[in-house]
Image 1 (cartoon, rainbow, N blue to C red):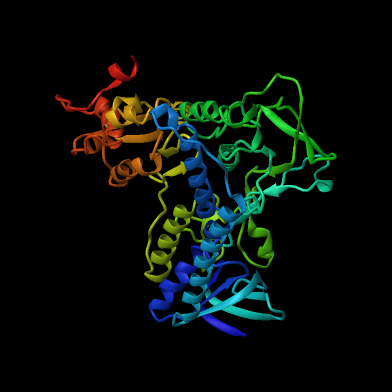
Image 2 (image 1 turned 30 degrees about the vertical axis):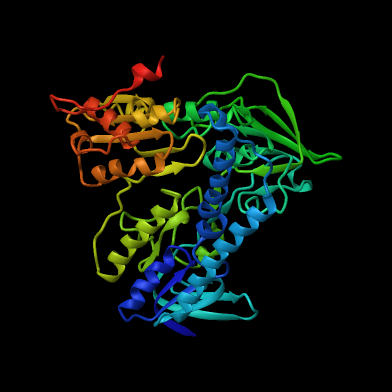
Length: 484
């Protein structure tokens, strides 16, 4: 049996803990059966955003005439586009694998690991055979996979998930997307913007229902310009026909717990070439044989951890999608830093997700941090709110971003409780708010610094200025021009 100071199960963010330990002279191992770098690199956020970037370009060409530019979209070389993205992201995974293999004090096991006891793992090697390894400490970061919902007839129908929809050789002429969360919204926009006839089915009355209500309302209205959107519906049955698939969607009479609302419409039958299931992801904890350990999971099969990210078994830590708190790559990286500090430096760092941002790459783009207005109301928390449209800033007006806005939520003393941005470059604009919140800042900490003119950051400035304590304001407001 090979013995190590630390074993990381999963070659994504968890492997960063292993390399940090190796740099301190500890003997470490990484167990990973698939591409290195985690799902984000090859099956998630990076390739999907590469595809969405191309959809954004196509969409801009279609709307160029609105800005006085004559242009026509003559075609999309879909197969070449997806092949180029595939090659790029898998080259990155290969380089990360080579980097791990070249690192001192790190041994890479290419295979799937499962517990034999609390410190011993059996690894089924990809090239055949198996090996047992034992670690003084174990870091679990095995990620998640697409959730397959219980739909009648699904076992007899070919379907796509977010894992395999990214690298299709041919673009579907028509597509039914089941799932109204951020994955369904992003992929629905991508395919539709490139010309696929998309029907999007979501259980809640609005798409991306976990966002602030103002955000989900705009995203829903925007996607309705690209797709046939059926909110408040649930895929009840699927079947094949001569040309593809038929999805029967019924009103979601019981609601889904996100907004408590239900649809009262009639059922619909949606026909398409292909079916894409984007109904969320589940943790890969079932691959680990946790029954052989003292590691507990909750009702959703997520690993139970304390605020230091240690599990209920001493010396076993967890991070990323199997924790389930924040299902984002940047959150997993943050958790990897926390585990590294606590495990390697005997630290006592607690995770704090209060300033954890996220983004949705639809059109318009979305970015959020902190609490939603609904969450504050449910908590009976006193707050103030300001919402400023993008066309308050001259560049927002120039870009014709008339459905964009910045919404600020703050306590009466100025503490920033949340910020929600819809519009161009939202994922970048949110960062100054995250920085302010991370430092315990107030609305004045965002409103007082000088912002470049004319830049989109002036929308953020103007929104925060409305709640600031400053007696004087130089915030731009071009709404009187854009409204004409």
